[in-house]
Length: 447
Ligand code: PHE
Image (cartoon, rainbow, N blue to C red; front, top):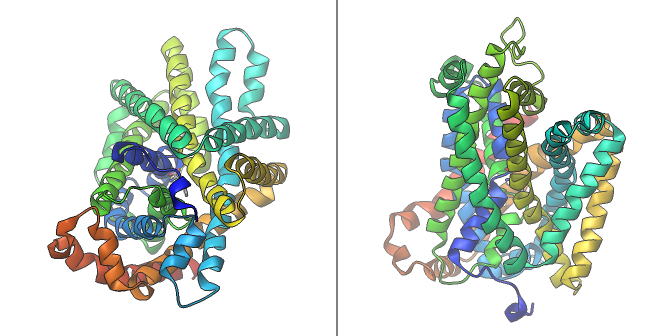
């Protein structure tokens, strides 16, 4: 571990944007609004907020702290805190790395579609309707081309390293995303029908509460904060020692949650604007039709009805989605790349190309067998692997790691920690409450 040659985020601000960039992704702008819309609106929002605060945030602190202590890739960082077992840490690290790679393999396909939806309106504008149609309709050719394009973008950024790639691009892209978001929300609010969507979103109807709603909310919170795959651990390892981890984690979680909330403010009203304009979004039973591709059907239909402003909005919106996806995908690729760099002594450039290439091949296999593989890979990695790996991390921090070392690590950026409320609650909370809650909710999934 040549720790002095490792990259570091150049500033705390840069770290926050990069970690928030990882967290803010398709999970926020697509997953969250879709889940909210199909789980009854406000009730899901309330449970989701509880899950972020009660489970995901404490786990984010745990993952960042292991990473910063280890100052290395997830495999080595886990080894540094889990010292009494020879194989435990490497096995867990490799599993996390596989989970990150699996998520990236299906994520790139989705992100590729978004690139297609961003380019299509422009082609339409120049009269190239056939090409535009091709970009937005499902076909193997389109899926492969766009997945390749998005994967290359991801590889391009990661190859440049921590400060010059990940941090630089996150700091450039995240503010653009926030501004685009604000413009879209204001615009949609002025459209007829928007208020019905707002009501569904903000007035909770607790008759929708169910065990599966809770399971979905926890899964969504884990996915959204990039937990349980080593991403936050590897980002933590690039964090300087004088940074206050609990405070920084709270800021990252707040940004992520604010963006998810804002995406809901945009998409739920947009659904009802679309409905107002004659697009069918609910069936007779009042359920959302085709909730999975909500974003791809409802929104373009809505943009279509808005004339030339619609074209601009469509391009803006889908560019925004691609930006969000890219700052997340780079953080997924960083996990195996960091492992290969340290553990196999590979050059960063080589590691990025080799691993990015392997994951691209995985994406191609999934794209060519979309019907049978896409949901399967997404489900195994996000519904099963993320909570289980997260559970293991909670147990390591709560039970395996030496308490004094844990305190010392957290104290470095926060000298008053030992007397703080955080330190009175968090250690036993991660030791007892987090594992029990994650395990219980996971059991509901299995049953
Ligand atoms: N948090 C990202 C999103 O919301 C997804 C992600 C998962 C990123 C796991 C990194 C690791 O889209």
